[in-house]
Amino acid sequence: MSFKYCLYSDIHGQVALLDAVEERVAAENPDKVIVIGDLVGLGPNPEVIVQRMMDRPEIDIVVGNVDLWVTRKVWETTKPKSPHQEWMFRMMEQTRERLNDEQLEWLDKRPFSMTYTPDMGHDFHVFHGTPYDIGDSDAFPFRLTDDEIAEKLIDYNYDVMAHGHIHGPSVRNIKNGDKVNQLVCAAAVGMSWDGDPRPSYAVVEYMGDGKWDCRVERVEADNEAQAKLNEESWIEHGERIAGMIRSGTFWNPDHMPH
Ligand SMILES: [Fe+2]
Image 1 (cartoon, rainbow, N blue to C red):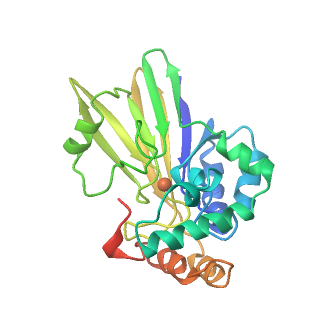
Image 2 (cartoon, rainbow, N blue to C red):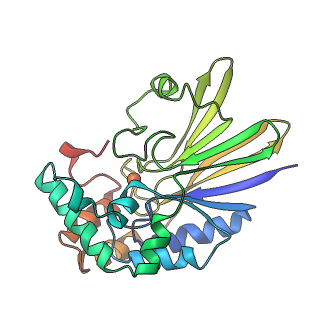
């Protein structure tokens, strides 16, 4: 018995890039599609993304840290640490204005994590940042080694775990006692920070007998058109977002988010 999951995340209001990923995901013919957070923020059309997901209840959605910045009004509770963060928080306030009450309530109620059990004793756990923190206080950045991540995951012994948040896809082997588990990063659709501007998604397939096949895929998309759309949108400093979509790197290397 096999079961195929397709996952993507960090859409951040970028509709054309989601279209490109969805087309490839549909061609995979998955049994289940899972979106692991950050549907909104950092992009011009949050309302389109949220409504599309609300209209497709067959897709499972996990909430991301930036989603909660918007639904829980981070700008009212957190003092910005820098002018960069002030800009981000203002963008979140303006993102919120584009969502109606029903969309905000729906987004706020998405779960923090989900567990799938395609076979007894074989679990697949999905979350946005880490299994114990949504991403605001901890994360699994590129610079950490597999062993350093294994230490953080010592209490989380699932065959496969999948997350988003760090905007660079990978599959890692993570030791836990005698077992080797897999950690999959599916991110990102909206903009990458690993130097490759192409949007990504992940495939996690349970093959039976405790065997899993995990891979990440990159997707060709019209990044230039989407970058221009951001520059010309309501977003203050849309050129910063556009630069990330064009280059696949964070706009301000001195202030990497993780
Ligand atoms: Fe995130």
